[in-house]
Image 1 (tube, helix red, strand yellow):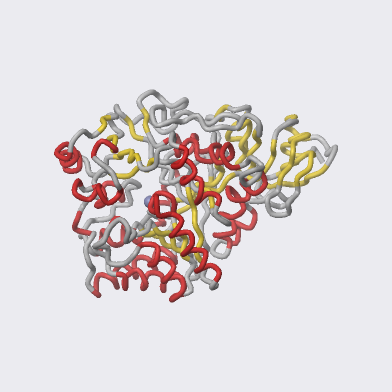
Image 2: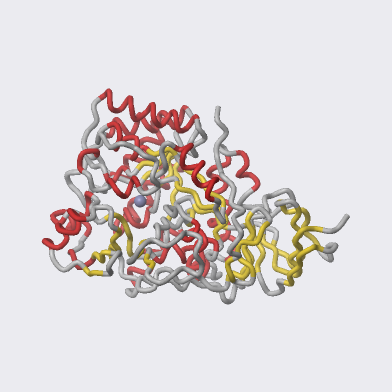
Length: 491
Ligand SMILES: [Zn+2]
C-alpha cells in the first residue's frame, strides 16, 4: 500500500445526493473517489483545502464548446462534464472519434441532431461532421420549411442510426425551423420514447410573441411528453420564454403533476447569443421579442447593429456569425428578478448554453494557453456556474446544497437511465468518478462580462476530472486531457 493518488484534507465535503455536509478528507485512487473520512492515510499528492467546499464537478447539459481552449474556460468554472445535447452532432460517431483523438480536458458527449438530420433531408445540405455545421447553416431557409413524409422518414432513420451509435438522446433546434409541422415533432418524440432516450428542445416561438406560429412552443413540448411518454427536456426556458416565463413554468408544473416527464434548464444571464442569420432575428420579426437592431451586437467585430439594412447585410454575409441579443436588462431590478425565476423553479437545472470562442483574428491552436487576445464568446461560457453559486447559494435563495444539486446531481440523474455510468457522476461518494470541484464559497464568482467575455471565474481552486487535476491552485494544467466520452451503450 503506497497510499492514495490524491488526498484533499480538511475541506467541507458536500454530496448533493446523500446530503452529506461535513468537514473531512477525500481520497482519490485510480480515477475514482476511494474514501471520505477523517485522518485518512497518505496520498502521493496532498492538498489542505480548509475553508473550501469539496463536491462533485458540474455536469453541463448544454454546451456548444467543441475545442480544448473553450473547455478549459469551462473547467475554470467548475465544469467537469460538458455535453452537446440541444444542437447535437451527426454522424455522432465521428464527433466522438474527433474528441477522443484530439483529447479533451473535461468529459464530453453528444445527442443525435434532429437539426442536422433535417438540414440534410429537407435542406439538401451535405453533412461533413464539422462541429460548426449547425451554425454555418442556421440561417439557410431551405431546411426550415415543412417536410414531406419521405423526408420525415429520412430524418427519423438518421436519428435512429445515431441513437444506435451511442447518442445521448435527440436534440432539436425547433425554434429555428418554424415551418416544421407539429406532427413531425411528435414522431421524433415517439422515436425517443421507444429508444428510452430524452429529447432536448429549443422551443418554437410562444403564441404571445408570434401569432403565426403553428403551435405554442411550450404547449408543444408538454403535449409531446403527455402523448408519447418521452422525457422532454426544455432547454434554456429563460431565453425562449422571456417575459412569459411564469405562464410557461405553470404549464410545466401542471404537466409534471400529471405525471409527464418534462424537465427545465436555465442560465443566469439576460442576453442571449446565436447565429445572426436565425429565422427569429429577421428584421421584420425583431418586434416579436420587443427588440430593435441596436439590441444586437455582432460578436466577431463588436459592432452594435445600427439599422435594419445593416442587419440584412450581416445576415447575408455571415449568417452563422454570432450575435449577442440583449433581452432582459441585468441592471434593472425587475428584469433581474425575472431572470432568476426559472432558476428558482422546482428542480430547474443550471445549464450554460456555452458558445464557441470566436476570434477577431486567425483561429489559434486550440492548445494555446493562456488564451491569446482577440477571443470572444458569451460570458455564460466562462461564468454560468460561478454566477449561479453567487446568485443562488445564499440561504434566502436556494442555499448552497440545493444550488449544487442543480449543477451536478440533477443533470446526472436526467441522463442515467440512458447512460448508467452517469450514476457515478454528480455525486461525491466512494466509488464515484473523481470529477471534483474545490472552491472557496466566500470568493467564488464569475468575472466574464459582455465586454470581457472570456475572463475566467475566480474562487475555483482545484478541478479534477477522472482523478487528474485539470485546474490546480487556480491555474490550468496545460498538459492535462483526462476527459472521457459519455456515451450510451450501443444496443
Ligand atoms: Zn438554444
